[in-house]
Length: 399
Image 1 (tube, rainbow, N blue to C red):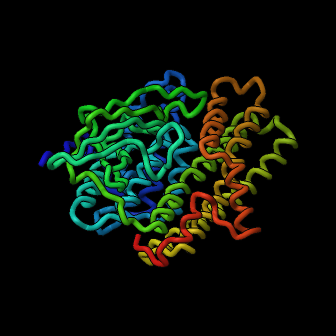
Image 2 (image 1 turned 180 degrees about the vertical axis):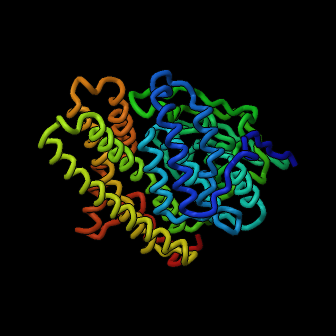
Image 3 (image 1 turned 30 degrees about the vertical axis):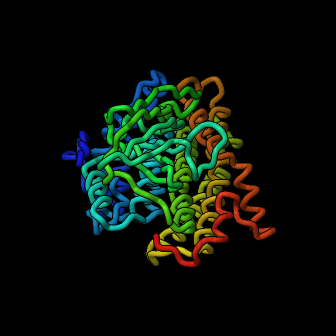
């Protein structure tokens, strides 16, 4: 059987043991990203060094459960870490979002040695990229990218879009459909022949995410790195999706907190009463958003502690995450927009990237739909469309 090869600075990855260590590491990394973020926004260079620092920080393994050697930090701590990093640079901070989603997915796999191997890679500093989305009209649950067995390996062919972080990832999780009807995820090691990652991301904000495209041509992957999702309980799948979305809300809160700090440092003494009123309102709005994030985080951790999820529990988590995202996705762009307004022509290129990043990130999941879904649920009892298939899920699904 062919063996995957990892070429990451794993030997230098810090080992985090608890929440305090994770928060401390986040602040240390954020200090470096504050200097690097403006450069990457300006030159659009792939942030190779900046993401290597992320690997070395040990943060990539902070949610890995202690039984596999990780710190197993609670979801609220993960959200705090994302906010700290986003305050330094929202674009760089978005890159590992899909990494943690992949880690959550691995938790649900059988203990057959394969996920233990990948968790060990994460502890060494490996980062998972993203190659799940596809352009065009198709079912998200039935990608057009194909995967077929060939001896001890699988072979993938297809095209992916919005591959955030894939260019610098050590493994690129690729969703693909098998001719027998099942959908799986293949963890493609970096440098695998036939995997072409393109720097064709062109946006006015979030430039350093380099969310380009991927083309897979006869990409051969060892069977040990392919996970068949046939029979995966719907409730558990929906729960993992909502769980991974909460960090997006934290990214926007971090952007708002940084806007507030920048405005206060820039010229707080001369901005007058209007600034004071805005500052006080923003402090309250940030606190309210954190309250919703923490509530959703607690619901997530309760499900994880039980070890299984019901359809009702997955729906409750989904709604709680959407509530947090509604506030957060309005908060970040509004706060960064106000920052530019208060500073006026003094803002210049130093500050405009905060608004561009917050606005671009908010567009990836339009808040108007989240607001509608939450309202429709409370008024009419309807689940959001992306969770509606929970109604036919098993009543108790293992995570």
